[in-house]
Length: 403
Image (cartoon, rainbow, N blue to C red; front, top):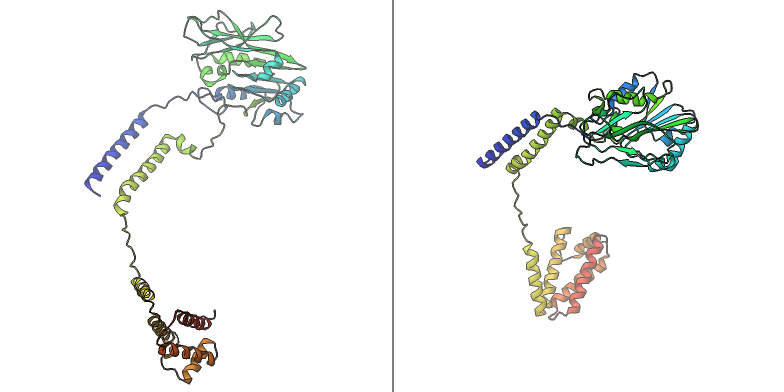
């Protein structure tokens, strides 16, 4: 390894160590991603709410399948609790939920964006509260029932735009809660409805517009847990509560095989070190050992080129006699090297041996040798004589090799 490579490697190692130190000493960033999953301890997860519901008198069960599939079992009774930032049901799924409610069951829809077909069914419209003379948009929440209403509204300590239901004089639903924007004091000067209950058949539908009021971040701030506690006081005390785990923004499981590594800071940086070390090895160690191999061209077959040149000269000069003699000599050499039989001055024994190795009759072998002898003694050889010689020689070779 050259001196330049060593210096570059040292600088890279120093930078990597420095980056690791900065990352290790940096405090963990808060993940404000909306989740609403019962097992997530993120600010907008719902671990606190779910664990508290488990301590209540009613049974609590998670539902990880769609409501349409879950409510296909007609024996299910109790309360279905939906909590997410967005709920959007298909018409057939919503109809199954409403028919289930008509039988005397209860359902809670707690979300910012309600399913449009649900709002149409209940005759409701949802709007957003915007600040008029201020840029502050921290919402306040409270309930309307005198026994559940807080002495002062509950403040959500983070900027957001709350939603409310447009209330008309002919509103058939009962108002359970209100919301408004914080304006220098914990008073809701212009209360807007954000929590309603409607009866369908023998059952009831509770609909709430502020799911963030049930997350870990809100419940752990001062005494805000009392708001969720009182808002959910309408849960039937003896019926099973089914916690929807299907309609959730956050994942209830990790789909990445690197989740275990990347979820732990120590394992994550060990993984990064392995990758960085592998790259450094390829850059430095690989260059040192893997030299380029020069391409060596194979030697040309000069015999082939020489033969083509000589044959071309003979053909251009029309020296058929010379070509014929060379052709006969090459054939004799072929017989001598392949069969170990002298072919220049054959005898009867020679003809007999050649007939045996060639699979031809002794008479045909004699004819071939007689024809070659005739051409050797002929003063002028024509092109037709040369073609005939080539034909009979090739026939002898093909018969010899079984072709």
